[in-house]
Image (cartoon, rainbow, N blue to C red; front, side, top):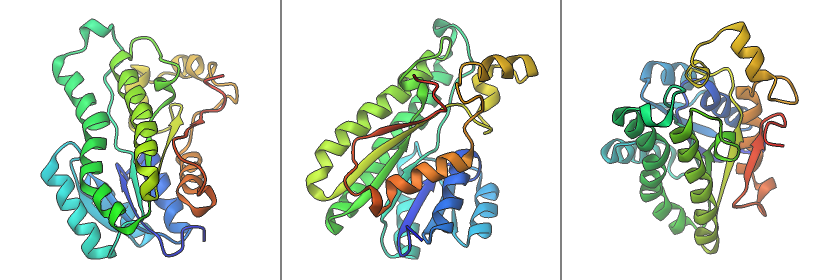
Length: 246
């Protein structure tokens, strides 16, 4: 019960890593608001863990503000914010990525972190505490070819994490990130281009431990970084990647 009495928001919590984080947080005692564009999926996870579901487009200020209002009304206060919602473009030459796909990656992976900070940092400052966790990627550390703009967005997230950590530390707010390698999530096929046994084998050959990241892996790492056990840890981008970035 490392998060007993804590409250949390997990964006993109309807599936994949977000669902794994939401489940782990609830199992460790937290009250969790599961936010996602897929409201039906969010409701399934929320019902499973005894949490709250919220429709949210993390790239839209009004939607983020509505999420904040719901969270504070239902939970009373917020202890933990997990920026997990993410998007990618299909693997292709960097000059062939459409403006629409670039803007989707920018809005979901970058703008969302700015908007949630606008919404929740004042609340954390008022309380003198809080933990923010950004779900970045190994792509932000060791970029894969043909995913350039996605890689760049996650590199931005890692730098933002460190900048936020330094600036917000005097206010008692910790900010960390986790860098997963690809996992069994809705984005896996997009990362690989197509999902075939051959492509999976090639992808797995780059991971020393020989498997994809799982939602449980992310939940375990996220729980530690957002718990009081990590009270001296801020500005870290923890690779949860089976050795991919070595």
